[in-house]
Length: 160
Image 1 (cartoon, rainbow, N blue to C red):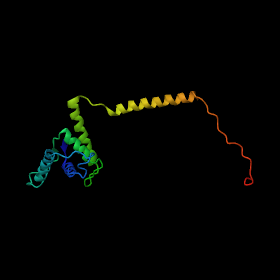
Image 2: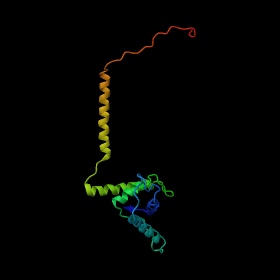
Image 3: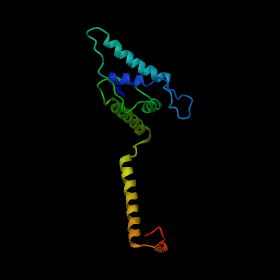
């Protein structure tokens, strides 16, 4: 995955251990290898930034994550994350993660399901079924219940 330096900083900041460790719903922990990959990218970024005048910090860094590591990142990163003035960094990172996961899935399993089309077809079928049921209800009133009426009450002394 090609990352910008500020994206490396954000990812590194979310890889700390979680308070939910040991609970059934705790997210998987980052592996040592994952932390070393990110640490190496961070080291490369900062060592170039502190180097001589001829060495400039890299504009992008390539970090290769496994599928498991990508799922961990997907779980840990908040889509609404903000870093300094960069308010879209969370969305950008989530998009990159999903692109990598999709690319890996395509390599292993072939083409993925187009979820938008799948959902649209499913929704269209449900709307048609609902419209058919409504049309049937409009044409076939079914058995009618007699309307219940209250018995007539003789006015008493308190009712004038």
